[in-house]
Length: 155
Image (cartoon, rainbow, N blue to C red):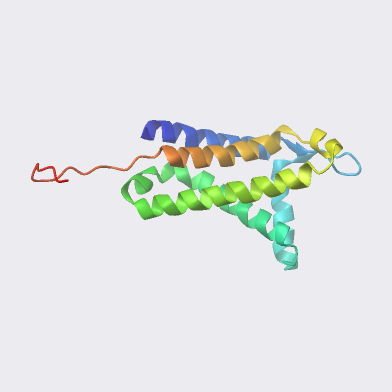
């Protein structure tokens, strides 16, 4: 099961990399194409302006940053998640919350009008797939069972 978890978490990491290279959307007024890597300057601008009045932007930014952190770290933290249930629970809850928060806001923002939904690029779906695969990979991690040193089985 843990090998499946590793494969799914690595697939999430590859999908996150694809998000950065592929077209996110082409909904700019002058029909410019927006790639996934262009999200980072917008996040930087969001933090430098200190305008946290729009709750959707705060949720989307924090969920995106948390998702990216978990997607990058999770394949390498499998031994930690196997050994520590509190660490696994924390990662699973945060991953699920970020998946619901960011995917929900992105789907609401980009699909309000049918013409906006038609302009979504493959990068958009790679980001959502990366989040989902990260959460799924965390669900596949199984705990190490330490046998009783005395050989006794207790109920």
